[in-house]
Amino acid sequence: MNEIKEGNRIPSVLLVGYNGANNTGSEARLLTIIDDVKAVLGKNTRISVPTLNEKNLRRYLNETKTLKIRPMPSIFYFSLKKMVKNHDIIMLVEGSCYMDTWSPILLSAFLWATSWAKKYNKPSIAYAIDSGPLSEVNKKKVRREASKTGLIITRTQAAANRLKEIGVKAPIEVTADTAFCFQSKPKDEHILQNIWPKIGQKQIVGFALINPYCWPVKFKLIGKKKNCYRWPYYFSQSEQRKEKAEKLSTIFANEADRLIEKHNKAIALICMESVDEFFAMKTFEKIKNKKWVKIFSSKNYNASQMNSILCNLNYLISMRYHACVLSMAAGVPMIGIAHDLRIPDLFKDMELMDLVFNYDEITPNLLNNTFEQLIKSEKYPNIICRSYHQHQLRAKRNIELLAKYLKNQKL
Image (cartoon, rainbow, N blue to C red; front, side):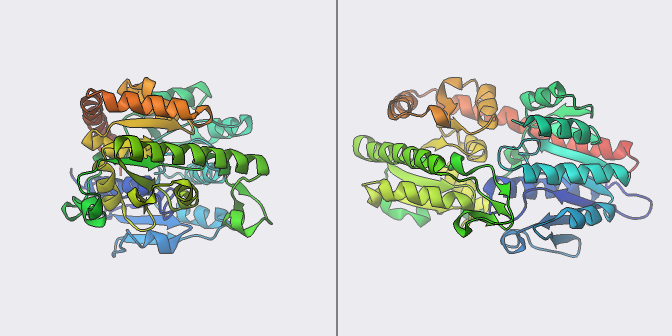
C-alpha cells in the first residue's frame, strides 16, 4: 500500500493494549498490528507501545528509531492521557477490549484512551477487538465512551451485535482476529520436537488452562502478596473460589492420566499467559504419570515458538481463545472450555458447538465423553482448516479498513 502522510510528515500511532503481559495472544496480535500499521502508513511510521511491564515487552519487541516502548506507572491515567495528546492516531489493540471478564481496570484504560482521543480530536480505532459480559455500570460506560470511537472493527459478528445491543453508536465493521495472519518463524517450525525429543512417536494432547476463579483482577490498596497481580491490582480470591479451582484442576489432572494410560498420549500443559503457570503447576502436581507431561509457558517461549508448539499438537483442550485460534492453522482437533463468550463465538463460527461447554459445567464424564467423540472422528481437522482459511480471509480486511479510515481522516 502507498504511505499515507500528514502534510510532510508521517503521523505517530499509539497502540493501547495488554502489552508486555507475557500473553501469547496479545503478543501475536501486537506484532501483526505493527506490520499492518507500517503497511498503511509506511515503514518509518512512529509507533509507540505503552506498557505496565516494560521488561516483559522487551523480550519480544525490539525498539528502533521509530518503534518505541512507553512505560507507564500502575496508576496509569495521567500518563496515558499525555500519550494520547502526543500522538496523532490512537488504536485499541487488545482483543478482550469491551468486557470486564478479566478486569474492569483494563476496560477503563481503553475507554479512557478513547475519551481523551475524542477530546483532543484524534482519530481513534478499535482494531479487530471483541465484546463480552459487562456489568450494568460498565454497559453505560461502554455505550457512552465507545460511541466516541472513530471506527470499531470487531473480530466476530456476535461482538458487533452485542455492542449495538447496548447502544454503541460508532461505525462498526466485522472482520476476524489479527492473529489469524500471524505466522511462526521458519527456525521455530520443529521446536516442540527439539524441546521434547523423548516422547518419540507419541501423540500430544495440549491442555491450555486458566484458573477462571481468580478473575477478575480488582483494584485494592491493601491485599495479600500472593494474590497481587501488580500493585494495586489483586486477583479475586476466597475459600469458595479456592475449593472450586482445586476441584477443576483435579478433573484436568485425572483426564490427563486417563489419556496417558488409555490412549498412550503425552500431555503438554500450555500457559498462554505467565499467570496461568500457578494453575498449570497445581494440575501437574496431581498427575500420576508425570513422565509424559511437560509445561510450556509464554514466559519462556515467544509467540512464534508458542504458535509452533500449538500447531504441532495432535489434540487440544483449551480455555484460552488464542490457543484455539493459533492451532487452527494446523487443523488441530479441539475442545473449547468457555470462560466468557469468545470461545463459544469461535466454535459457533466453526459449527462445532458440540465441542464447547462452560468451565462451570465440567464433570469428569463430560470431559471424557467429549474427548472420545473428538478422537473417534476424522472430520474435525478438515472442518477446522476450512474455518481457519475463512477467518484468515476476513482478517485480511483489517488492513483495508484501516487504510480507508485513515484516508477519510485525511491522514
